[in-house]
Image (tube, rainbow, N blue to C red; front, side, top):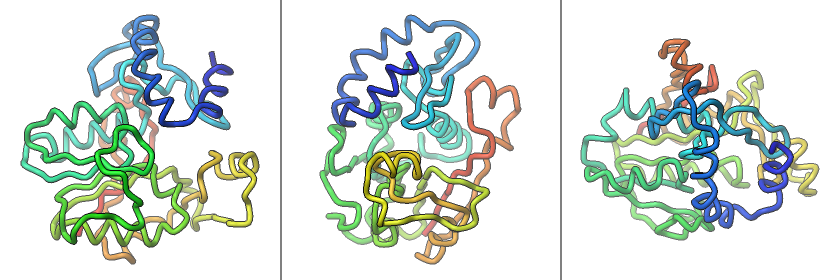
Length: 254
């Protein structure tokens, strides 16, 4: 199964993967039903989760029912427990909407919910994050997770995120990050997809973010709260939901 997952992830275009996943995930959910691990997004339990990863696969991380990863489950718990995202009226913009969230957020009556991306079949608005077709101060809440590592000019993208967020609004901009790395690493001269995958962890990533990511957001104008939410949860809950201990949620305010 591990080898098959790696082949699929590296060869099948992402928009097609999204479409195919609707057909295959009920099969995985049925085959892996059990009581060891629970996905907080749909509340369903399994004897194990699926492996996931492009270059280096992580075992037991992909929930069969929602196809959520560690970061998705952590964000869900944070939004449910620590914010009014699910209850208060909000105009929300969601970049590259994750399948684990898309239908659930779309159904929330309190949200005026818009999705955007260049390629995703789930996007309402096809748009370049560096040149967005939205007016200044448009959104109360912006979700832009695991997007910026794909963007060559992430400074321009961050400025656009700041521009369209309302004063007092909130943005959550998760990224793959090496917290033991002080400075972000990027090298535009590395163009071979295999080499990029080996160095950056994925063929379409253009950098490895370090701890200076938070400073860069602050330089744009955001107030940034570095939330280590797994420290606020009981250890048994972290284990049961298969969360990544120490992962930081960048909660940004304008």
